[in-house]
Amino acid sequence: MPETRRGAYTAAIEEALALALPAPKEGDPAALVAEAMRYSLLCGGKRVRPMLALAFCQLCGGDWHRALPFACAVEMVHTYSLIHDDLPCMDDDDMRRGRPACHKAYGEAMALLAGDGLLTKAFECALTFPEPGPAAKGVLELARLAGHTGMVGGQCIDLCADGKDVDMELLKAMDQGKTVALIAAACKLGCIAAGASEGLLEAAGKYAQGVGMAFQIRDDILDVLGDAQRLGKNTGMDSAHEKRNYVSLLGVKRAQELVDGYTGEALLALKDFPGDSSFLREFALELAGRES
Image (tube, rainbow, N blue to C red):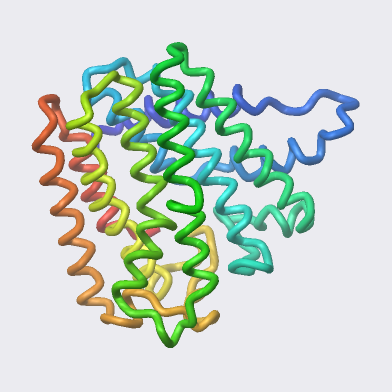
């Protein structure tokens, strides 16, 4: 993908996140939770979701800078979910983005609060969008897709499912919540920031469906074949917890074929947009073949 555009997005995202969550002032009695929030939010990562928000805003003819409050909000929700996922009561993982997970650095209780703080900060951030109508619409979309009928619901399926009973239908329902929902929120929020039509929001959702499923299945492949150092997190976690995924059900070859198929669906959805979709096309292809 064009590195200049990607670089501009990334720089703007990092600056906006740092401004939205500044370092605590000296003497702040609640400084520790702010430090834990910043530890997880500002440590880099692929920034897939905020980048999608900016790219869809631009694709729909908007000034992508206007989508930054929404982009930051989605990344805050994503980061809170990672903090909570890593806790011993959930996935029990001690590495995230190449360094100790939040609960390993700050303790379980403070990590729990850091996740809670990022979740609430996300909606505060989204509501700084300058126009109240789109701001409210964006917050409603984010709340719906991040909550119990979206991301949280997917995590519930993951926790409650007995690994031996997980089939393709249940696995897809889980991933629709855990992964696709928040990617859909990012894509749709970018469209909302640009004032796009409902038809384009629907097309953005179809792109998100393809990219999100491809991203998750590729993640399953990397959990088996990937290098922990490159990934910045432990590999083999699904098998260690006796969880079924696309690789254990289908094998690597068939799983990658699904990645390619879902990526094709995402590319097809871009045909509904009148603008230049080359960035998002290359973005989807890159995610489908990523090694980290």
